[in-house]
Length: 251
Ligand code: PEP
Image (cartoon, rainbow, N blue to C red):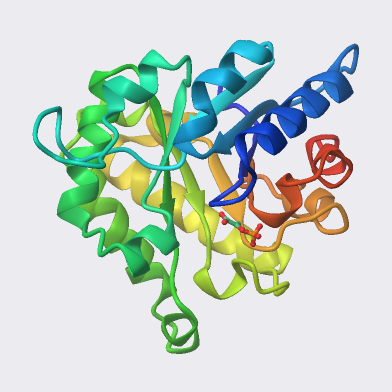
């Protein structure tokens, strides 16, 4: 059975001290609460080890926001999947639209990153989603299909089963403009069908597909009520405990 997951993506925000405070605050807020989803926080590389050591990582999974497409060696400034795993992080966000757009991450590069993440025991949270012009041209289904096939469809069914997907329409990220519950359900169901077409219904049914894009305390309940929306990848609203907690509690 697939899991409900609410994952934060802090992006390039917080100093180490601020990040530690935020993570510890979330840890404290979750204490004694009955929560119906897995909680993950995606933090800058510099924070991973300290945060993983400071909180209960069985209760809050820690995610890197990226990893290198190379194993190790002369790649100055890069951080490998093995390095991420050695911090105590259990997840890695891959293919975020900001990385695709600003750092030229192609389907091929992402394919390598996914393989290295899996080889190092990390759970990739793999992001897909169309830009506004593609949505307006009615191409959103084919865009997400190509992103999935281009980076993930060489995986075995067993490895695909280790992934979490996040559908994030680029026009909704950080814009305050959210996909409607119906729009989210429609494309999540389509994504699940695409997975079923390649790997079969069981793998598709077991895959957690998160929604991301201006998800907040006011719209999370309605979005998560959809049968094919298994949680959220949350940017801005994950940067404050009092904004993130109501999203976690929307399940
Ligand atoms: C994101 O960065 O993945 C995201 C969904 O951002 P926001 O929630 O701020 O739109």
